[in-house]
Amino acid sequence: MSIVKINKVRNLKRTVNYLLQDHKTHGFLYTSHECSPDTIVKDFQYITDLYNEKNNANKKMSSRMIVQSFDPNEKITPEQAHQYGVEYAKNYLNNEHQFLVVTHIDANHLHNHIVFNNINYKNLTMFNSKRSNSLYRLRHENDKISEKYGLKIIEKTREQSKYLSFNEYVARSKGTSFKARIENDIDDCILRSNTYDEFLEKMKQKGYEYKQGKYLSFKHPNSKKFIRTKTLGINYTERSIIFRINHKDYVPLKPNIINREWIDKTQDKFKNNKGLRRWATLQNINYINEINNILYKENITLDQLQELDKQRKNLVASFEQSLNKLDDEIYKLEQIKNCFDDYRNSHAMIIEYKNLRTTEEKVQFKKENFTRFKKYDVAKKNLNLLKKIYNINDKESLELKIKSLKKERDILYESLNINREQEKSINDEKLERTDDFER
Image (tube, rainbow, N blue to C red; front, side, top):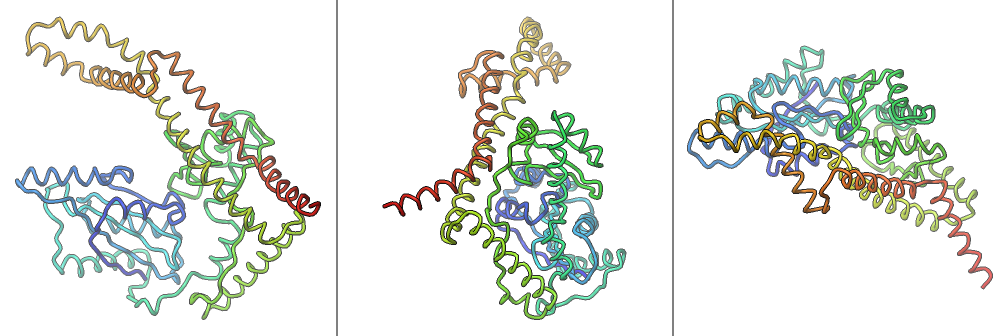
């Protein structure tokens, strides 16, 4: 069964940032309608401005959120839950409101968050907040979805809700999640490729589709959505993949030395679930064994291991921030590197425009050459940006700058090589202990 409730959204930007966290969505379980997740505030505000203009009003942008929750006993996948949420949003909002559907998989049950603009973008009217629509019809449309896909139509209280099954926890603990499969396939194709193009071809042979824009994205054969490799971590961005193809001895430094965490079985979700308690016990045994193996192998104390683990996490987090910043800068400059050619190619058009005598002629000329003028304006803007920020005045200087940033990025990424950094950290600890002993 599934249940729904609706609330007002106080801060749209903060809400959307929270909803789109990768660990909650697998990085791909979201769909938008007549808006973009990256610019949703501006998109909603645009419709609000149209509403105010039409009605001579001064209404502030507002939105609501529907939460659609599924009973964990229903045998549905995250992808199915997301499909039901998108279909429900379209039906309930009559395809007349901008909306964003986000499916969360990190709680004890699958659930969808449906954020929508209060203003109907087709006729610029406000959402009907009467009880007949915001309660009865809200539930009725949800019941229709449940009936269509064979879900029970039973509303249960919070106290009656149940937790994810034992089998689901086991599947996640074994790394059989959607993301884990993609990571493993990418790692395998990197090892077997000599060039980036060869890597993409091998991913295609595994059944993946890919898209290249600001971020490299893959669609798993069993999925309907593309997932950005950036959501898998810094080791799976396009430039990191290229570096790893060219440096086969590179072993990415992971954030955690210890791959597991201790599970507190006193939590409520373990009290009435024997299978879940059994799984947690096995995980804790594996946790202890892993720690013991590291302590024995590296001849260090538990306190030293925990300090190393903390240092590792902080190091990786800091480097990821710097690497992402460099990637964004490289992408931005590569996107505008044709501005010099575009500006030069527009010269004849601008001369012709300036030689026109009447305003009517100039207006007509601009209409006929709208696309070319737009390209000219963008090129001029980018030229000013390059000169102001980078003091770059020609294409050759820009290409040198991009090359320099890529080299800087590679040097920084190489610092996260586990063959070098982890060994250095352990050796430093051993050397410190030897010095203490000799003293």
